[in-house]
Image (tube, rainbow over all chains, first blue to last red; front, side, top):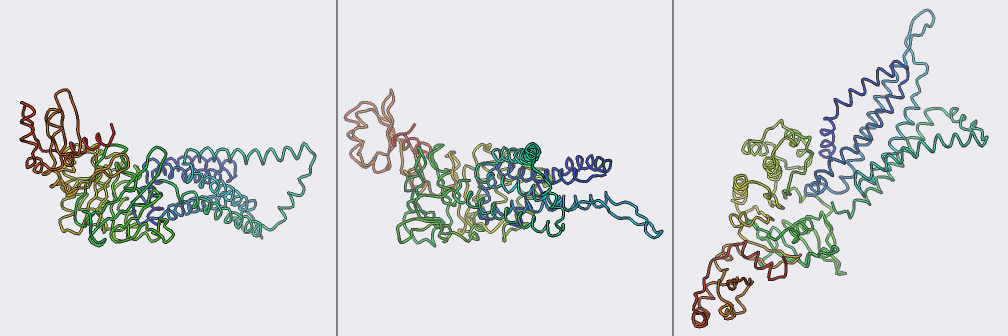
Length: 223
Length: 314
């Protein structure tokens, strides 16, 4: 298992230069705007894209077929991709949270002494983005195992567009129909820790369901 | 290579069947004795790769039983259904497989490959891997995409041999390589089986390689195993009779393995050259025609071509 994840991580190492180049640009942009959500979104989107790239490479060299000649089971092939998903996206979230925390630090005078505090850092917003992107990858991974990477890429784009249409279209429709969105604002009253815990639990459930579907997809597949 | 207990055989396959639309691997059965090199020949699409992939469980077979190095991979249940029973993957430690081409990410270099394999095979021997890398003169820091086809193949072989592999399975691994590299690779296989405990199963349509190294030859055509023979016996016994049509009619039916007619006469592949010369054929052939018949040794390629044509292909 460790070997399979390592194989993907070594492969991804080749992308580091361009990854950091874009990250550097976005860092400057975020500092300019004093808003870290660009950076977190970029890191999470890249995480999804990189995950698909590893599967794309596997497909190009028929790695999965070869892997089954080694002490590797179909289950391990699936597990390794889910571990990679969690690893990449969690790293993206942590880097994003740290970045956001430091970006929004500001000097604050209290009792004559100067301190650095974060006043407007929305960490739970970053977790929502994390759950969203892990959710999207959870939809695409079973497609990777069933139909291959190219079709999974299409599904990825469709799901992202669908989400955008659903959110913005839904809001617009509510506006047009005169439906009040006050109820949504009540969500802000939920303490962030509880809110995030529920979201992460939901995310974990989606990942587990997706993993089980992927296992079914690969069970009798000719690799 | 027909009878024997499974412990004496590295591979035992019984009635292996895989059905596709337009192609069926049809009840293939064979045994590979431990310590031997078996050449698996057949034209493209004959079923060599399907057999290998089904043996390894990479494609699910419809029927059949498979035993590799004493481990039952597929067996017949009491309800007469054949099922995959291999849940434990540890037996794969003892098998090295090389396909046509390198199946590792082209962005990796050899240093990374060793680290990856160390975390996949419990028995990965880094020292042995480095020894092969040096022997094959492979550059440690170059990415796979920068290696030539021959180098990639050598790398795949180095990986296959750098763990506790007792059975080496090669599917068209030498195709597309030049004769010098093929010869080097065949030398490595010879070294591998030297101690009598290691086995090589080599599928190829390059029959000259099989002729150089194999102890046994298996011929597959349209999903059916047509021939399983000891290579030396095959080369010693099989012959091609070049004669007239009248002479060909006199060859005992039981000796004929294949026939090919052309504008000059008939070429007949016979299974037993000595048997033919001891039969009434030579004398009777002289009587029916003024021209002398010729009897040549047959190569594996000849045997393959005649068998395939007689079986109704190409």
